[in-house]
Image (cartoon, rainbow over all chains, first blue to last red):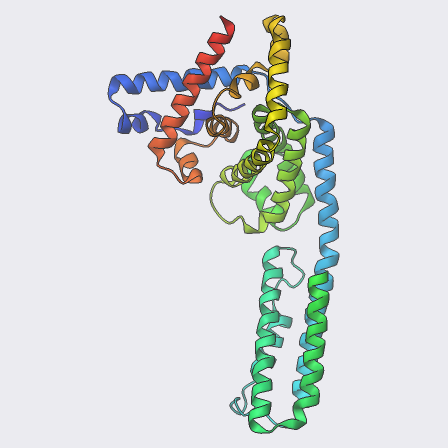
Length: 176
Length: 180
């Protein structure tokens, strides 16, 4: 077992900041004696069984993780693909979109599909997908408002279907 | 293979979800963390549960580990687990006091070598306040410097140094009185 003060390379300088020379010497002796006392007791080692159980538990959790992640990623990809299909079926561009520019929803959906590390296994990616869910929801709300304000009733069915699907996907996402 | 000098690579592997990397981390830290919990609790079963919980939390939180000393991050989780255990234990305080007194009575007729088997160090650590005992064990098993400990505990380095000095001095006196 490494002595606890092995990392205190500037121990003497540290002591000099807080104590005079005599006190610093005494404090140093006390701490070094205490460290030796602690080191004199035999270590309580983790049993081989405990170590094996810990590793088995980690293996089991890691084995479950990719299935859940793939399911969630598939759900996100599905809704993104649905959005792109609906956008492509719309008869005219959204009034808030400049000609030639993709709509906010299409940008959000493509961003999800294009997102690198889609099969990554880190929690950071799950957080990213969650954030993009929210962005898709916001874009959907924007689309709804524009539809109502500008009389694009013919988009209503498509938007309704998209909204229903999004809610369904989100429910499955959080259940998984 | 489990050389702590390869620790950055091992931790990077864990962040990618590599089983072998987690296995290596367990090999490196399981005994140190178990000893840390055992010295503070004196209970092998509880210590096993706590170290198991520690590695579960490590797996869950490894994505949040970015920079800085890995031991500081790991033992911060361990310290939180210990204090959670302490809060739970306070609810059973009466039972534990009875057990300590029973143990003390049982120790009286024994020789020193027999008592050591019951772990004298834990018995004397129990006589310190919980924060001091935990700090001493944290420093010993984590191997962190005074500066790193102070940063972890969000307190001035002089405060950490003073607490450790007083704690070690008191512990040595308790052990000497127990010998005498």
